[in-house]
Length: 459
Image 1 (cartoon, rainbow, N blue to C red):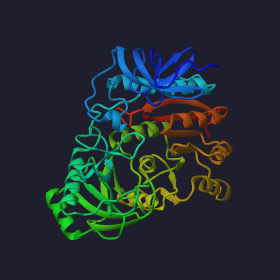
Image 2: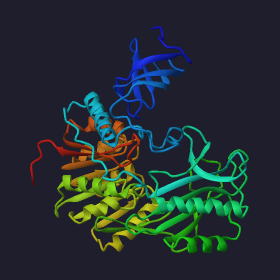
Image 3: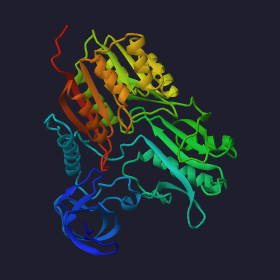
Image 4: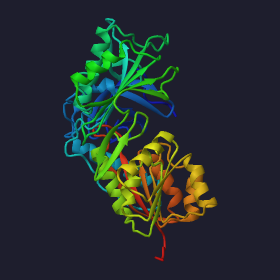
């Protein structure tokens, strides 16, 4: 097949659809072109920037015919940053796009002809993030700066006013980088691997207003640590703890394994629903707790857990959804590979006076295997919330072997969710698939699917 487009040439195209990253899709002689910042229904002039054998990539040069869903972006840096790749689209339409993306995967992959429910959005989709990770660098004038990496690069775009980050923690980060500059504290250089300050990480309890500041360093000491701590705490009384994280490895991983508490207890607390959670520097906690509470409520309610039920919660993190379910269940077993998260989960159960949970640190595949095949503990309900890669083959086989009455699958990657549902749909009815907008104005979407064992006879 002769490729009908050439690099660095301009073409006028109709946008016929939007892809899973929110990019526009056009075709020339049945050859696919992916075009960021374009919307289904638009006619645009594009410059082809990359050509492969099966498809090409273009960028918008001119919008000839606008979509009714297009809006002027309210952020000056969103095109370069890449963090909010849908800021040029009305919020309500982004929810439709996310539902349609999940529905498309379902239609292509599953035998079950199920209609994906509408995406559950946010009433106020701004400043929702409770965690920020700011890389630290040097600008062209030699000044220390913080910001975000430009899309697909390690160039730092200085933050002005991020519309998804928390306002308080953004102010703290800006103040801290100014302090670092004034006190001539060195900045880490990725190329030479010299210099001290690598990242500034902040976490905030959205309901408690407790703030954690983590300073990631390539070394062991920060110049005048005591003065730094006193200055920050006096300026920002909401700071409950300051932690020095030591990361001397040549890696893209932001946090190292060693934390030294400089101020406070080394953790903060937040509330989800009626529950209180302890959050430490390395523990995973949902970035958008407002939507996380809605997501977990959907999962727990759809499971219809009873006091007779034993529940497995795979990939339990710090025990958030385990403890949500414990109120209704006979017993909940939470499994997570990160030991610190399991320690936090055990602590969170104590904080909330919950006694019917057991948290196990280890690889989900191995722990599930041990619980089921060695300890002969058979769950009535299984909750899974795996990483983006989805479930491994052994976990799926174990689920199919023990056949729990219900399976609640929470996913941050609809593609691997649908792939795994394909493996399960012969034994399970897929009752519902509900997208939840955890990251407004981005292409990411979380999904909660409820599966029920076919021909299940109540005991």
